[in-house]
Length: 169
Length: 168
Image (cartoon, rainbow over all chains, first blue to last red; front, side, top):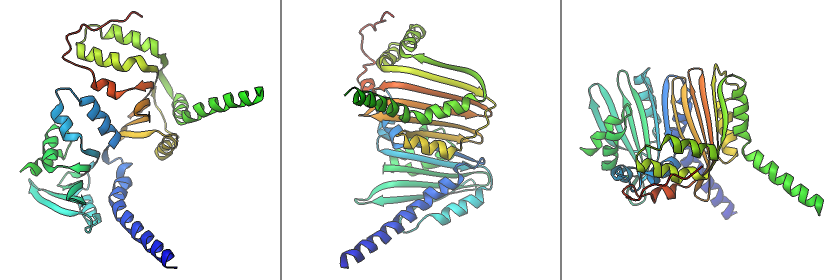
């Protein structure tokens, strides 16, 4: 009876944790097929492949930047930016993600969220930008070094990535 | 004994076809549209063509290609126009994952999208499938063989050894 109860409690706990994490994934999934949105997804395997190809070349700096990144998702649109910004910030599970920084830059609201695992390692960095014409939701997964992400932003030619340079400051 | 052997051979053939089924199905589906170009190129033809094309390229590029190309078995390409998708994106995604393909990257903007799928075995990429849809045009490309990324790491771009141009 005791075992059954413990098992049931673990299952409920696991389900609730998974459900909260799924909130971000659900947000991506719900809009990824929407024609108004641009979506970029780079898988862990693609990063592994890129790291191997870059090894030994002059792009060693890029390799150092990406070797600990396990995945990248970007969702962006130029329509109803304020609405999607509010919706995205409302859906962030606040017991899992901490606000790292809030920036107001040229009429755009920018929020950085981090999710830490044991040992104070940042396992996910979320960037949400809501401007007059731009909504950007960016998620980096892996062992995130904020300084490296800021440097990587300079090499990324993607709308919204320029806000990541604030992490270096 | 003979029947058992025949059964085993048939089973092996069936298994090899079934893992490639979603890609074959996607190619078949797109072939129903206005085909601009379609071709399947065996590995030896690809190697010969690349050697000719890259004869005057820089040594690093040539060495990289020389390392990757020998193990390519075939490349299949299909270019179509006015494609009307009948297979749902989710269905394509699910069937690819069921056949052990991993989605490596996806980029989607308005009605254009690029999807890169790959199948790995023992740390080597055996099959790459690239699907590009833009406006009403589509390009599908499948590369089958063994792409060993570890071998690329061993290329020394500073090597002063002359690179070999192997005879066809």
